[in-house]
Amino acid sequence: MVALHSDNTGNAAPIALALKVVGCVLLAIAAIDYIVLLLPPDFSNPEWQFQLSSQITDRGVLPLLGVGLLTLSIWIEQFAGLSEKGSMRAVTLLASVALALLFLTMAPLHFVSAGQASAAATRQINERTAQSEAELETRLQQERAQINAVLSDPSQLTALDRELAKEDLPAESKERLTTIKENLTRFKADPTLLEAQEAETRNRGLGVIRTEGLEQSKRVSLEFRKSRMRIPLSSVMLAGAFAFIFWTGFTQAR
Image 1 (cartoon, rainbow, N blue to C red):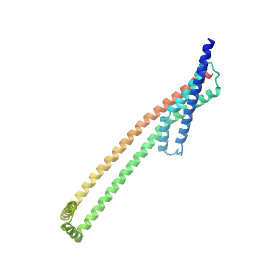
Image 2: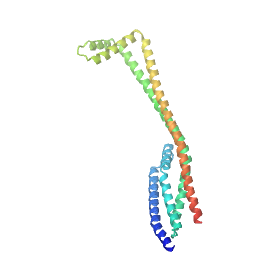
Image 3: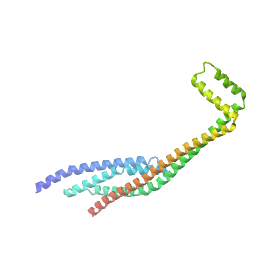
Image 4: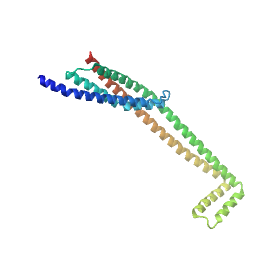
């Protein structure tokens, strides 16, 4: 029996050591990762808060695995009757409670920042939509001014006729110029046709711009709603796991 206990102790010692090394390395990697995520800090920016809470939570499995391995190494030492180092238990308990508080904080932080970031993204989409509408109106006004300038200047119409009369004019260019000449002739005979075409172009362009803006808003809103459900739930689950590890280790240490 003594020999069997000695064999178990000899096997448990290197296993516990390996688990401690791997657990410490995983925790160190997670700590470095989280520090890098904090740089450069921009706590007043909801988008930065949203990205930070998302990435910290998505990387939460790594420190959980590290703390779990450290806890397992302590249990192996305890069950094998090895001399346990209190410092390692203390480090594990402190890491567990700190990570539990961290992920518990991430849940409300992400929920609030996601709402603010969603509103900011929607405002940006609305601003881009309004800018596109203004650019469309400017382009239409410029085109109308150019058409009116040509209609009011007979020399430009004559120049267009001379260009069409060239025998070496490419077929594609001739077709385009012919269409322009026909439209100018119609607009000159009935100015209301120009207004009707401009209104049709405006309505068609506004429809496309507003439809694209609405679709973008819907996609952004859906993505943020999904994130507001997923990240806080994951954060609470991670916080619960770390709290459970802390409570288990704390009760055993008493």
